[in-house]
Amino acid sequence: MKREIGLRTGQNSLRSKYRALTDGVASGLAILSTALVIVPLIAIFIYLIIKGASSLSINFFTQIPKPVGEEGGGMANAIVGSAILLGIGSLIGIPMGIAGGIFLAEFGRGSKLANAIRFTADVLNGVPSIVMGIAIYSLIVVPTHHFSGYSGGVALGIMMIPTVCRTTEEMLLMVPHAVREAALALGVPNWRSVLSITLKTASPGVITGCMLAFARVAGETAPLIFTAFGNSTWTVNPNEAMAALPLQIYVYALSPYDEWHKLAWAGSLVLIVLIVAAVSLVRYVTSRGVLKGAS
Amino acid sequence: MGFHWLMVLCALSIFGIVVLIAFELVQRSQLAWSKFGLGFFFSVFTDPDTPLPSYWDPVNGHFSALPFIYGTILSSLLALVFAVPLAIGTAVFLTEMCPQRLRGPLAFLTELLAAIPSVIYGFWALVVLVPIMREMVDPFLSKYLGWTTLFNDDIPTGLSYMTAGVILAIMILPIISSLTREVMSAVPGSQREAVLALGATRWEMIRIAVLRNARIGIVGAVILGLGRALGETMAVTMVIGNSTDLPPSLLKSHSLLATGSSMASVIANQFSEASDDLHMSALMEIGLALFVVTIIVNALARFLVWMVTRGAPPQRN
Image 1 (cartoon, rainbow over the protein chains, first blue to last red):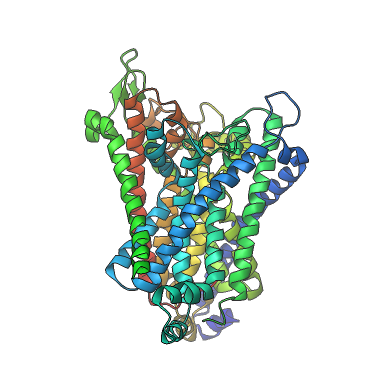
Image 2 (cartoon, rainbow over the protein chains, first blue to last red):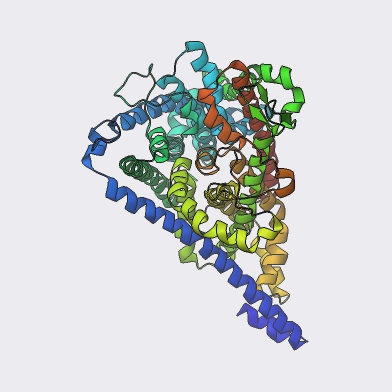
């Protein structure tokens, strides 16, 4: 329809045709590039799911890795290891991120300090994960003289902070002023008003942010290579070198053995399911507008 | 009041963490810095046994980051060449042409793909992409474009700067595309209507009203994608081939199909087996360089995106 406007108003019909042609070509290119992007991406996704589903078995969840050549074996230790590392990471990343977000939205709004901290959080977000790995290596692993689950957890926790902090800030900013004023008018101290009124109103959004951060670091490999290091035996002691799902996938993917490749595909599927679940839930929560009543 | 200060403390500790990371990297790279100085980033040594140039030689204790800087820049630029046109095309389609019904699911899909871990992309590339490159793409390029000397495929392994560029492109596409979409939606509708009212076709409207107004933000999105590509580790490590030398004929041939290493991949590969303090220190210095470069790139990108979106109301995709 819009194309016809061009045709009718054009004085010179050749020029109009040229314009209509460019328009068509440009639209075609845009559609083509979308197809070129979407199709391979879907292909990757389906490939991962098929490969993973065909390799997944109950052993994967119950057994620890076996030496090359033996049948079976699983990644039970890596799953538990990942859970522990992510637990430690969340203990560090979530409270600090939320506190940072509260500062940015409630106390420092518009101040120079807040701008500086917001910028620092963005910088931290952009630090390559391998650099985070070697920094934590020299901060924790070198002084303690051994690889440990703790150091891996700390690396993951630090990587969670920026995401949690920025989403918390955004969500708190959506809470209307009237809510805060109402709380303060009742004589509630400021800290209580922030924690049990503002933060509570924004909690679905804040939880969403935490899950997003969790899903992001769940698949991180680079910061763990020199911190948690990986471990092919069973351990739940975070003071020892610890296995993690992405690390195990990395090691198995680079191995030449089919049996190990299969385990790596299964591991990839488990990771992806975890991440897709988190991202979809986030999408569901934000698109349904849980905060609608508040904003 | 105590609560207030607790929050300030937590916020300040974010600042502290970044400073601490920088401090550690600087301190641990002292040894390499004092030995090689700025020459660390561009010098070429000569191997004592053979007259060939050498760059990274832990045995003889000389280190130059040149091959890795070359590898990082080359693979990231290739990624941008592949990803940027596609990302902008996709963003144009999604914001300006796509039926409302499709927009949500497509945006969601790209969001999902941005969340797939790097190691899984690397694994996929190793199993699917590398054989495709080895059997089909590389021979084709070297046969028909070999005369440019860019595509000499001497050792056909499928592992190359080119393969790293392709997988990086796939990985940074979602982020560039979603940010571009964001800055395009920030262009006010009245601008579009004004141009359409003058009798413009849809493409002219996109070009004049949307792309021109959003161009700074689009550049910002591209630079942010570049920042991702520069620091990307696992996928690149798995497909770039991890050789630590530049081919002797590099200055003559620049083959994109040769194996190499990027700054991030050499750290991932050699850090745990670093034999002595100098080797470790050299790797730390590469890490420091990567840290500084990504900070600059990210700051620049954020600034550009902020320039465009600051006036606009918050967007929900």
